[in-house]
Structures are given as structure tokens and as C-alpha cells.
Image (cartoon, rainbow, N blue to C red):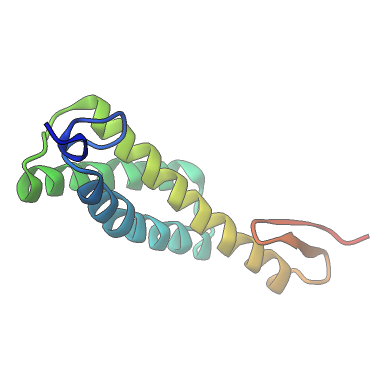
Length: 119
């Protein structure tokens, strides 16, 4: 059996399928969801609920298009963790920009993902 087609710790069918579906398609949607959540000043619990739903949709795409499993908790958790990290990245990037721009009298950006009080 080819190593690329063997079940791995992270991908179920192939690495390329995982990269395309989980990282690019679902990851792009997760990033945009995190960005939208930051723009409406949403809380983290709401973002996690959205990622639970997006993970279910991601598992369905794995199942319907690439002969992956639909109800495997392990691979569902892998997809959930990957897209949640991407969503949090999108939220933090947008929130740091918001805090520096909207509250520039009080905060400044430390780096791409963080802000601090001026002083």
C-alpha cells in the first residue's frame, strides 16, 4: 500500500485531500468566519459553535467526494482542531487591527495578533 493512501494520524484518505478540503476549503471558510466574528465583536463561544458546524460539513465533503468516513470521531476532532486554529487566527488578526484603529488613543499593535495599552 502506498504511504500517501494510508490512514495517517492527521489525514484519512490522502494528504492532498486533507490539504484541499480541510486546510484550503474549510480553512478559508474558518478564517472568514473568525474575521466576521471579530467584526461584530462576537464572543469565542459563538465562534466555537460555528466551527463545530463547519467541521460537520467538512466531514461530509470528505465522505461525499473522497470516500472518507462520515462519523469517525477522531478525524472529526482533527478537522475541528485545524479549522478552529485557523478561525482564531483570523479573529485575532482582525481584532488587533480593530483595537489599534478604533481605539488608537488607548491601544497600539504589538504584532500582527496582539495589542497593548499605550504608555
